[in-house]
Length: 88
Image (tube, rainbow, N blue to C red; front, side):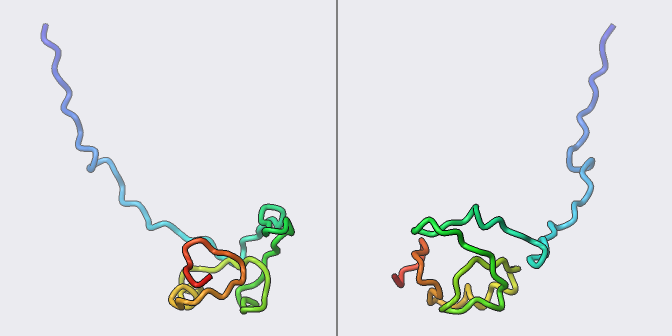
């Protein structure tokens, strides 16, 4: 007796179209300040994006659309060292 070979199903046929990834709402993200420390070993607190200025201190979480104005500006707004920025 000969065994019948099963035809391999095309993997693409079995896949259902996946929804695009959903970005979390930045206002719902709460960071633990103990996870972020500066060069002096002080905790870096989370601050709202609206408080980000050249004189503020903290870490802000933003969506891509909220962050774009800061990303498009070629100038660093932080006095801390940020790898990848050449203006220090």
